[in-house]
Amino acid sequence: MEQDAKVKNIKENGEIILGCDSDSCMKCKAEAFCNNKDSDFTALNDKNLNIKKGDKVRFTIPTLSTVWGVFVVFFVPLGLFFAGYYGLGKGQGIASFLFGIIGFLIGGLLAFIILKKKNKKNVPKIQNIVDNK
Image: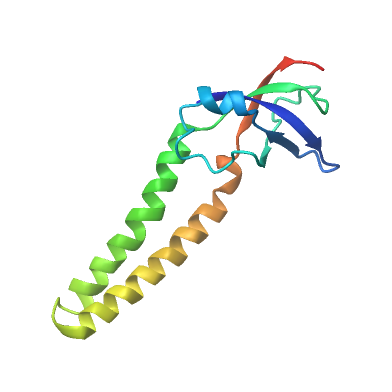
């Protein structure tokens, strides 16, 4: 998915801080569930473009990474809940429920670790400069 944003800041370590304009949000397909409205986010300038503060740039968000994130966040904990409930607890009594909860918590921790390791791949990537100001 491609979207335009304004460069709000460039840090000394090379991180580019972007922020979406409100009119850009209206055109974005992710507008309904986006948590970056009226906030800043980091993007990667892997093409080494000559970007300055105030430039309008086009960036992409990897769709497959978004799908992978949803899968990890929802299905790993849920899968481990059922593994604990039916596998260890045999699906009977309070012990099954407790094993299911323990499996769910372990799944949540695993999802957190997996997403933290893959974090650099999920960062929006700047494709080109749309408008220099």
